Length: 109
Image 1 (cartoon, rainbow, N blue to C red):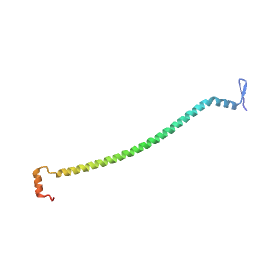
Image 2 (cartoon, rainbow, N blue to C red):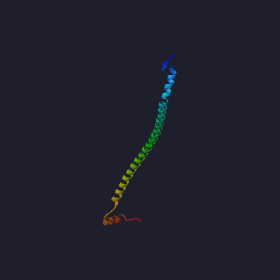
Image 3 (cartoon, one colour):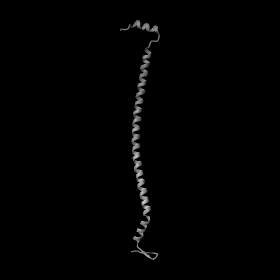
Image 4 (cartoon, helix red, strand yellow):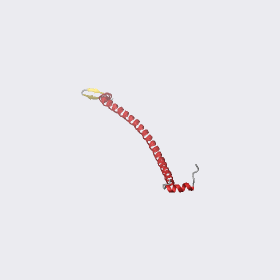
């Protein structure tokens, strides 16, 4: 076994490893704590990301529904305008024309 002599004291390699570990222990503990904290932060960020994706999906569905409703409303408005134009074309504005229409087609009631 290799022995080192340091200031006149014999040290074995295992003693040096142990001493180095003891010396580095605070740094190791600090890094482990930081790693744990970062892992927790990542986990929380992943949960937040999942929640945001679900919210985005819900909003996309609502947008799609609103688009369909808007298209349906536009179609309904167009049909209503056509019906209004048709009815307007049937309105007799001149009272003399109304008399002629009534005499030609007497009202059945």
